[in-house]
Length: 138
Length: 138
Length: 138
Length: 138
Image (tube, rainbow over all chains, first blue to last red; front, side, top):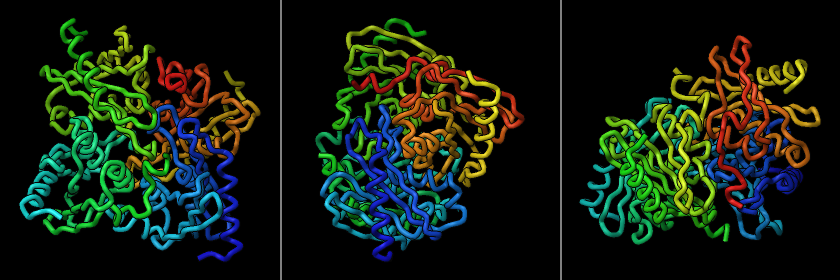
């Protein structure tokens, strides 16, 4: 689990990420953030498309950014955060859980903040138990 | 939960489904089946693409088939089955869990058979807890 | 190109397909149809998801259905049709063009009907020139 | 069209992008780059997943990065580049063309370099004619 300072940084990164959301179709802004073992934070927002299935969720944007910074080749994911504009818990969708699964350990904590700041925390394994992953293809 | 006869039908449908798999890239055949409240079974296999992200998983093929038969407009999903050619438990990937989530109740059982016939059963909610779904967008 | 009778059948299949559309998010119903070398027609509608990228377009639904009927193992695609509820030409999105590319010849005609019945026809190669396909991975 | 200096920068960005490719399944590295109206270049590589459809192509990675830098809110796309490790022309797949379509003008040039440096240039409209886009949903 994170220190309260790290948790606050992860949360603020999620909130900032949302401001770059391109979501003209759903009007549903999502912001995600990843804390890496070296202390770096990478954030991402959702990027929609007129052909809905071509869209990219916030968590997947952030993963793409981290891979392209070379971060995932050397660092591990310490925690994941996600938030939206609603006061319900918004969790990563199944595609995002699958994307995180490719790169994170099963005990990685995922922080989900409502718009009023209430937090729910689950590990990746709790959100995607009995997962399908790289081992299944080996 | 299903009667042993229903379970056997669901399993055989999965096995048959696999024979239609188009998986030249992964060589990983998956077969899925859905049992509906009226007793009908719909089955689907994975359909890959040279552009990998354009592929369609087995469970999603089956859902597309059921929707296009008009089944999901009138019937409910009683159970889901999935199998592959390996002797490990192969569970629905995150995208598939999300796709099932759109149409099934959270307590729907999902049967996963290894190639030698061992079964693992989990409800949708167990495989995709704290899910993101239609309610989140309402 | 098709006989006028075949063209009419393809068009009616598209229109019928639309009635099974599950599109609560975009409210944009699409119907697609594929004519095979043995005279069979397969049709599909779009299947959306609360997590937009998990959705399946109409053309991709139809391809999944055809693969799962074993049709694509033995028959070739003679023509593709698509229609929606608008009076503009609605063409297959890029994902659909890519999906069709995996299974159809480049000279396959794609018929696009507006809601008032006006038709536009292009070959697959015209809609997806210089395409990325199975050959690129070989 | 670009100056020869801009073209060289775009090409080098593609080549550098490839080094961050995460493609353990296809072993097919792709690098993409986008030149913006303010002279900035954003680059991206493909990010695969054990569940193939959850992968993100190189061009889509780059778009996600640009959106999340806020670039697409203020700048326009001047040119797109793509390269791989093969000596054939590798063009953006249909999903990528659709993703670029959401953000670029139809006359945007797309540069495709083979591994030995030969270039092919097409506009977005040439690669995705009669496209489905935001206007279709309005």
